[in-house]
Each structure stands twice: as structure tokens, then as C-alpha cells.
Amino acid sequence: MKFTPFLSLLADRLSRYWDETVDAANISNARILDPVLGFGGDGVGVDQCVSDGPFSSYVNPIGPAYALSDHCIERAINQGYIFNSGLSKLSVGTCLNTTSYVDMWHCVEPGPHSGGHGSIGAEVSILSDTLYSRELT
Image (cartoon, rainbow, N blue to C red; front, top):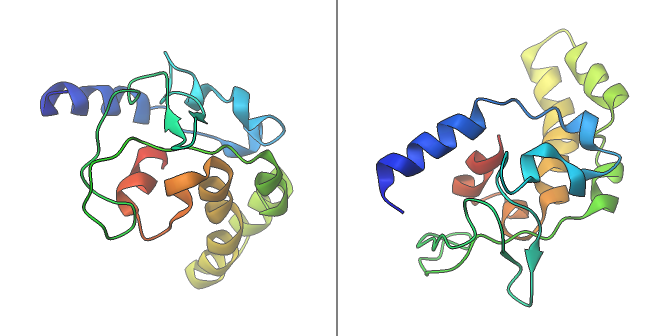
């Protein structure tokens, strides 16, 4: 995949804000994971490689974590994680109603933010992998 079309593809998909609270009840059917409108679905096989969507044949030379190795984009959707992470409308609302940036950060980071990473799973759940976190945020 050439770099310029890749950026255009990302810009098109990232222009749509993902309200994770809407998809919390059934993240596997989230529009952001749609193979045509989003980034493709869950990973398959032992390697958990995304098998559909724009990243199905993408080879990433960065990661996992701090390693440099060619590998696929991995996902392991974890519906249970999303419920245990505070990704409900109530939890997000609580964070948004805090009165300072520091309070909001302490509310969002271990709850709704980590819930997005953990529910997508695989490499996205390795929080040192900022390349992957940009794929979804």
C-alpha cells in the first residue's frame, strides 16, 4: 500500500468519531470494525491477523511493543473487557463532569480510554504501542 493512498484512507475513516459507549453492548458489530466503512473486523487464526477491511494485507514493520518485526495488524475482540472497564455512558459522563483536567485524566485513563484498547485486544492492548492506538483514536 503506497503511503499517500494510505493517508487518504485513514483520513476518511478517522473523520468519523467513534462513540464507544454506543457499541459497548456489542462491540463486534461496531461500525468502526466494519470491513467497508471502518478498519476491518476481528483477528483470525493463531496470529489473530485482521482478515478483512483495509488492513487485511498490511504488513507493519513496527512492533509488537518496542520490537521491529514485520507482522500483521492483530485484533482479539474482548466483549467482556469493555463492560469491566467503565466504558458505559454513565462512566464516560462521570469523567466528562469532572472539574479539572487532572481529575478527568485520572478518570478517563484507567476507565474509558483503557477500555477501548482492552476491548479491541491483541496489540492494541499493549499500551506502549502508540502506533496502534492511533489506529482507533
